[in-house]
Amino acid sequence: MARHARLLVTLLALVPACAEATAGDYVQEGGDSSATGDPGEGSGGGMMEPLPRHLLECELAAPCEFPFLGFDFDKSLTPPGFSPSDLCVFTSLARGEPGLIETVAEFSDATARLDYAVVGPGVALRQASGESDAGGRWLKGVFRCELQPSAWFTACLQAPSADCLDPEQWVVDCEPLDNLVCPG
Image (cartoon, rainbow, N blue to C red; front, side, top):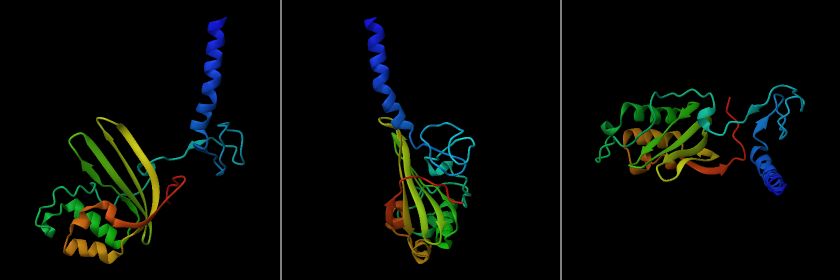
C-alpha cells in the first residue's frame, strides 16, 4: 500500500510539470490557442498542429543552394576569397529577396547555425541553434531584426571586411519574439 501511495504522490507531482511543458505548443486550425490538446475544442474544431520551434521547420525558399560558411575566405579580404555560395548569400541579402539564409560555423567539438528568414524589405527573423559534444543540441529563441541596408551588403561584395564575415553583423535592432510564426 505504501508503494502505491508513493507512486501516486510522484505522479501527482509530475502532472503539473508535464502540463506546463506542453501548454501553448499547439494551435487550432482556426488560429486559436489551446493547451488542452482536445481536437474538438476551439473555433476551428479541426486537428491540432504543433507550432514551429525552428526557422528550418518553415517552408521557406532558399535562394542559395548551400549555407554561408565564410571559412573559405582568404586572409587578404579580397572578393575572390568568397565561395560561390557566399557570393549568392550577399547578393540575395543586397537584393532583399525573401527566403531562408543559412549560416554554419564548424568547430572541433561543435556546430553553430545562425539562420535568417528574410520576410520583407529590410526585415528578417533570426534564430541560432547548434550542437556540441559537451552540451548536445540547443535552440535559441527567434528575433525580429532589421537587415543592414542593401548598400552594406553590396559593399561586402566589392570590398569585404571582417564585419561582412560575421553573420551577427548582418542585422541590427533585434527584438525577441514570443512565438515563431512562419512567414508566408
